[in-house]
Length: 414
Ligand code: SAJ
Image (cartoon, rainbow, N blue to C red; front, side, top):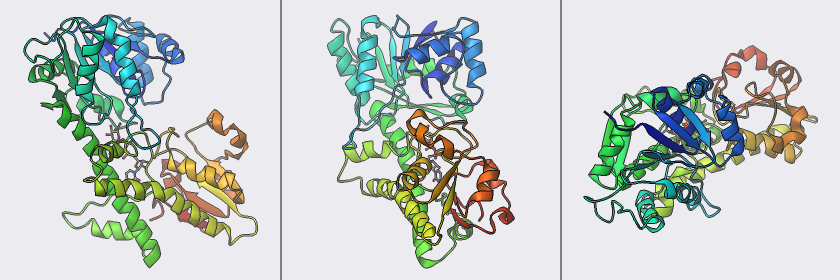
């Protein structure tokens, strides 16, 4: 018996909502808590406020059966899972204010025997801080860092690892790293994750779990930076980087990732900074990789400007605005940044092609008329810039683009 009849998930975004819905689908009562009234109302109507395949059906079922409810105010539960954002500040140091606010919010309803799990990607030491903060907020309870054996509550970190677009599969099938403040804390968290995780739960301490998550995303960032640097070296040496990578990857121990217009999303471009912030002298490759990946959109925009200079009336079609293929997520997207820099600099006529969205976010409403269907853009543009490898673009035939200047940041034309 897992011993959890009521679980509360704090933060109902890309991680919290799917997690809440999956746990509810296992028959456990789940209260989701969020600060957004819009999110809470939408979920309580059985609908969703984010885009993720199949999540709508799962949430609808969980709300209809009464197992999932959303609220602005926390209530008592046996386990609290914190899944709120951890952005960085202007100086690239981590902003833990959402975690602290979530903890202050739930502190009054926490009771003896409760488990608190931090899922948010966090700098090393955050889980320990939770224990210390909670000790101040609830001096009546013994925290695990105060007395491991007599602690009244259990505190652990279990970093989320799911890939946007495959969240529901990966939530269940991925292995999970569970780091407790004490072994007892980790064991208690395992019993919660056993409710819905089919992958293995790997136990460690909280600091190692925090670092593991940051390491995974930094590993990817460094490897993408290597590919991006190669693409710039190859431009300089007039070598086709895509052919080069294909050939090099035939070595049994080489596996180079794909260059692109830069690294987007809310994780890989953020998390490495948490490592740099906590070990600035040691984290050299990690910092350099971030700088290389952050510089790539400027490099691509310059290339487009140079191409535009060759035309009296440049018509530039930007193919793709999302941060990666076959999703509609425009947040932290290098493709969107590049397109917007062309628009604000008035580099010719810019057409925006994004098959996954019907309208631009409100912030860019002034450019609404630039959103153009692919066939029209192909007809009108003299410069084509492939910014995202969406399936619609990959289906294009080289003949469709033969008369254009093509800047292919994703290598869809090889
Ligand atoms: N990208 C490249 N070249 C590549 C691979 C990716 O330019 O070869 C770019 C993408 O276009 C995108 C960015 O990198 O702009 C990130 O995309 P992604 O698919 O690599 O990763 P995310 O940000 O969607 O999700 C990552 C995942 N982490 C790892 O794969 C190590 C996911 O498992 C994490 O849960 C997620 O970050 C997170 O929330 O931390």
